Image (cartoon, rainbow, N blue to C red; front, top):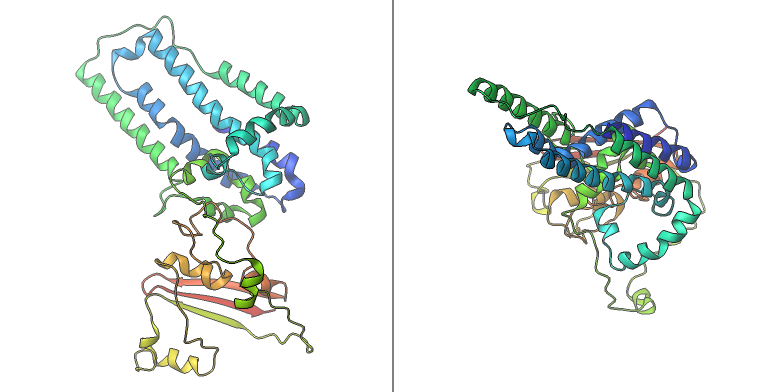
Length: 351
């Protein structure tokens, strides 16, 4: 039932924001279903535990009534974030994260914007109101005729097997499948183009995945803009007089491989490539872990946060990296990785 509501909000998201999205296929909605199951599992695993654990206490009407109200309230709160992002996506270009909704000043800004939001986008408020009513109606009540029964040891065994099996299935759904690692926000691009990641994902999922990560970057100012330009100006204006000469571009990224390993005969093929390539000897790493290397090398994004850029809430931001720059010149790019030796290869070839 809740998954159908999530899919309904995804359809609304597409209908209202289709001009901001790329071509959409069935794969985007199928991928969205995987993220929906993950979110619903995160939110409701405790409710499932309270509802399925064996015991006669579950037949108490007050217990069931409280469980229903809490279940409805918590799920409706997360459903509301999906409705809000249908409009908010226009201004941010991505799903809201925990850091975004808890940013400094947001508590005052949200209350100030709420009246104008309801006035301008009244149809979203009506859709949410109707959905909330339907959601409440679809939640079943405890059967009034049911009463505590004497439970045998065999009944307890069956109920515990069913309970543990259901919890196991819910954990699998919560991690997005049986793959080695649970799905992350960045996995949204597996089911469509980058501009469609907001359609594939849902807001509860991005909130859960960012709730323990502090992505805020403290703003510091050591120099004014004029002083900075005298020290180093990163903006370079190129005015080439000759046409662009296309060459194939190959970048090798090696794990834990320093300059001291070059020229010792340990890697003769790599040593020979250096003599025919651009080789920058004075390169220094500012990241502490391997995952920081790819965004730094390919997009010039340094490690400035407590979390890696790839696993942060900004991972789906539009970045003007090397592959994107070369694509404008008619290149196609492939990325390969050898896990055993931790060698990453980026190959951009002219068409």
